[in-house]
Every structure is written in C-alpha cells, then in structure tokens.
Amino acid sequence: MPPLTNQADISQDAFDLYHQIQETRETKSTLGAPALPALGHALAGSTGAAISNVVTYPLALIVTRLQIQRSLRKEAGHTGDETYESVQDAASKIFHHEGGLPAFYAGLASDTAKTIADSFLFFLAYNFLRQTRLKARNNSSKYLPVTEELGVGFLAGAFSKFWTTPIANIVTRQQAASMLSRNQPQRDSKSSIRAIALRIRSEKGLQGFWSGYTASLVLTLNPSLTFLLFETFKRLLLPRQKRSDPPPQATFLIAAVSKAIASTITYPFSLAKSRAQTSSRSIDQKTTKATTYSDSTKKTPKAPPHVFATILQIAKTEGPAALYEGLGGEVMKGFFSHGFTMIVKQF
Image 1 (tube, one colour):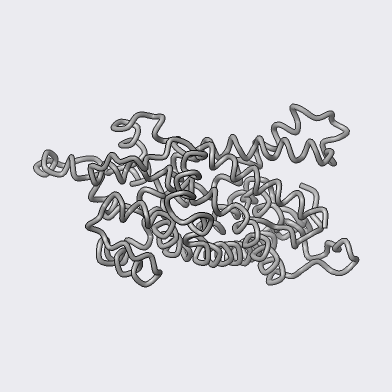
Image 2 (cartoon, rainbow, N blue to C red):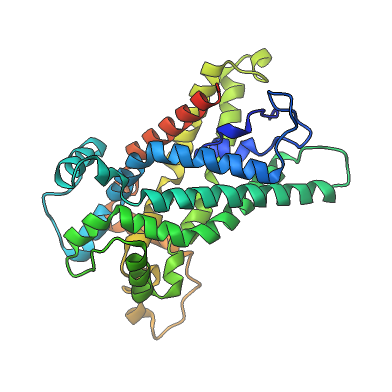
C-alpha cells in the first residue's frame, strides 16, 4: 500500500480507518509539513469518523431495527402492524409514527461519542503495536508483512472494542427504544443513558455491558477481508501499469464492491451482536435453555463460542434468510460512508 497523505479524511468506514494509519512519521503532508504524530492521527481519525457517523446514522438505526425485530416479536409473542418489510418501509413508518426526522437520530450523541472513542483508541493501539513490531524486527523497513499488518489491525480493534462495547450496548437500546416499549410493554421504556445502564445491569449484571463483544471481535476482521478483496480485484481487473496508482473512479468502485462483499460475509455476526445487546436475557440463557435439562446428567463437549451458537440457532429456527435481514441497508450505509470519505479526500 502506498503511503496516504491526507490524515483528516478518515471516516467511520473500516477500510479507510484501517489503512490510513499506515503512513509513516517521515511522510510529508500535501502542505509540506511533517506527518501527524500518533496523537494527531488519532484526533484526525476521530473527527472524520464522527462526521461520517452523523451522515450515515439514520441508516444505522434502521439496520439495527431490522436486525432485532424478529427476536423481539419472538420474545414477546408480538405480531403487530409495525413490522418493517424493508429499509424504505422502516424509514416511512419511523418518520410517520415516531415524530419525523428526530426519530432517526435517537442515540446519536451516545453513538458519536462511542465512534470517537473507538477511532481514537484504535489509532493509539495500532500505532503502539505497529511500532513495537517494527522495532522487534531489527531492520530498516518501514512496513510490516501483510499478515502482521492485519494481525496488528485485529488486535487494535479488539482493544478499542473492549472499552467501547458498553457504550455500544446503550446505543443499540436507544436506537430500539420505541420498538422495545411497543413489543414488550412490561419493560421500562425510558431511553436515557442512566436508565438503560441500570436496566442492563438489572437484567444481566455487569457482564451484560459486554454483550456482543465476541461478535465485535469477529467484525474486526471486516477491514482485513475488505483489503484482501480490494487487492484481489485490483489485480484481476486493472492493467499492471495502473495497479500502483489506479484511477479514482476505479478505486471507488473496487473499494465499494469489496466493502459490500466483506459486509455480506460478516453480516450475520453484526445481526447476532444487535440481538444480544437488545435481549433482556444473556446469550448463555438463550443458548443453553433448551439443552440444560437433557444434558444435566451427562458430560458434554465444550460449547462453541456464544456468537456462533447464536447464529446457528437463528439459522435453524428462523431460516438462513433471517441472518441477512437488513443487509441491504448495511451495504447502502457502507457505500455512502465510503463515498463520503472519497469526497472529503478532495479537500
């Protein structure tokens, strides 16, 4: 990957977030000034991520609701008129039944804070781990092998998600507050941060704030997968002489398609994360409820990670198609986010 020169254009899109940090300290900016140090990278990335988050937030809220509506109906036995059939149908019903445009921004402040923290922590962790690995190699190279770059990205993502998953749990419930109160009237419908935090602790204990963390770890592989697909398509579709500096239009299209394919592959984990974060029961309760009695008198092999068990359960009980409910909105959000990044890069 050639070094990138504009550090202020980093958005929420994982592809750009992952690769923008690869610029070395010696790289000069377009204005001729030294490249930003680690803290500068983190601040610039956080700012870009926050702006992109505001732009694409309505789609994020719609996707979350599409992901969780089946599980909410199943828990409450609810089959009302507010079922969302598509992204467009969800947007129309939210707008007309929940107070217009403000309804699309429920939880925006919390999510923006999470996005800033996530980006900031990612950049600091990435820079630290990368510099540590470069020093350990004892050579003058400014770059790590691809596998190590991807590994550093994964570890940095896991670190940042550990600290921001509690906020993510609160955000998901804020996004779904009206659905939760409508489908499960017995649950407290207050959507303030404090009320939701108390409710999570009451329902699941302190560990409940990390619901969906395992799925988040899998999702940190998304930028690595996007990068591998991007490089593969670039080699397959572009002439050799254009691969090192592809035209902007080709870069945009190849990156957008790569992001869409990667999102499709990892989407079931995103859906499982949203369901885990809005459920009033822990995943342990849901995945073991059906087997606890029959297996209580005999030893069983070690259970698979909870997120994989959840995905298998959804596929068995609701069909494979249920794992991709809301995928269109997720792909659309990624496309807009990437487009926003490309526009900002021109400034």
